[in-house]
Length: 390
Image (cartoon, rainbow, N blue to C red):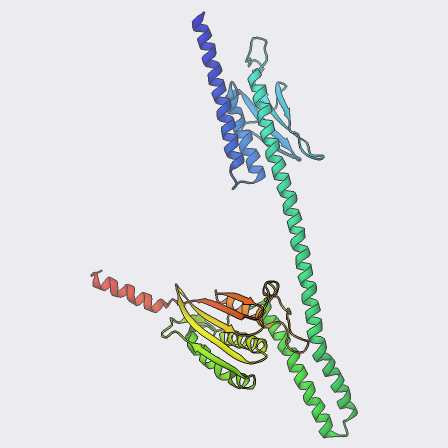
């Protein structure tokens, strides 16, 4: 009698261990973030039979949100253990475990399922309901985030469209006005010639706006090669020297000697330097010192442009790379300069950092990766093989 009781107790412990193992496996499945919602439910339904008295003679399925997930070798029968999945809203779900053999009996009363198995299924249903609820909440959040991103894109498109219309409207209005005047003065060639010259200048202005917009939208790198950043700066300063002289700007350079070359389009880098320098000039209305410095970094070189201008607050700095954003008066700029700079630097695999404070000037730091010369590396590798006799 005592031996029979021990055997029964042992059997209960075995069943309890199977149930706990199943719950543990389900917890691991739910916690794994790399699987999809459907994969999680399919994995749970495959594990479910292992918790029951005779796993080979039971099968399971989960039905939720119009989808059905079944264990291997699934066959429905009249002997079924059912647990509802409480979900939010109109969603419905259930977990069902079927006994495949009508002769399968787990207790003397003929019930194919143990009382503990019924409790287990309710516990599993609670876990699955919680997981589904989290999934549905994440789906709603993702939809809201997508709607917000869409609204933000629409707002930016609206801002861009307004900027394009504003910038192009001025040169087009000038073209139209001077063309009409030239038509009226066709019998006065000298005056008509002046009007035509204004038409040409306005057309070139409009073309420059469109060119910058195209460069912003697809700032691909053109012809590239090994470029000495110090040389780009020297050549760019030669172009800007007359402008500096008119604005009483004093240029201070501190160029690190022997910089490693970078793989770049020198013309585009010159445009970056010119745009940054002209921004600095316009910020220093009373003149002052413009500092240009190059530095070595780990696997990169840096160009630091510092001015002593009016500076910007944090809110302005956050927007300076947006197309058509400008703090200048009308006719003083298109607001495309820094967005173009950002596009060129990014296309070259670099980054730009801007630090500024009102009344304290602005510091722009551009970091560009150094060039890895394949021929030099190949020569070094060949030399190493020769030295080792390979």
